[in-house]
Length: 66
Image (cartoon, rainbow, N blue to C red; front, top):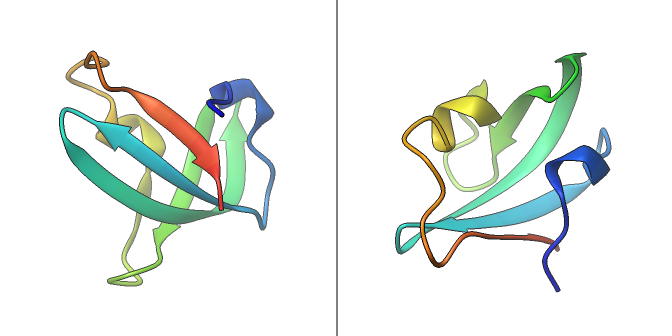
């Protein structure tokens, strides 16, 4: 079941699907409203969630908790 970006919580793990790509990540901190620093669960790289959706939301956009 898809959830909203507003429902993300620190320490929880999520899967984002957008434009055919899947990203598993853990929320590390919320810097501002809807600006999240996340850690990729596969590569352990940290980045901002906005970087993943900066080019828009595809028809397959889905965000779910793991």
